[in-house]
Length: 62
Ligand SMILES: [Zn+2]
Image 1 (cartoon, rainbow, N blue to C red):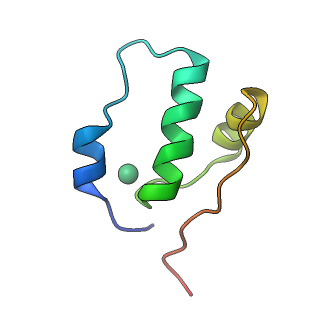
Image 2: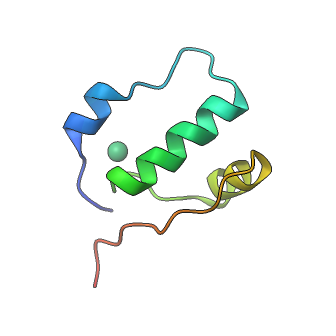
C-alpha cells in the first residue's frame, strides 16, 4: 500500500451520502494524488460506469 497524502485528503473530503458520480470523481482524483488505497475492482468498475478512465495506480513496489 502506498503512502497517504494527508494534505490531499484534508482538501478533498468525501461528501456525506455521495452520489455515484461524486464517489467516482473522488476516487479518480484520489488515485492520481494518493496511494493509500488500492483501486479495487469495484472502484474501477464504478469509474468506468461513470464515464471516467481508470487512472494509473501508484505502486509502492517497483
Ligand atoms: Zn489516500
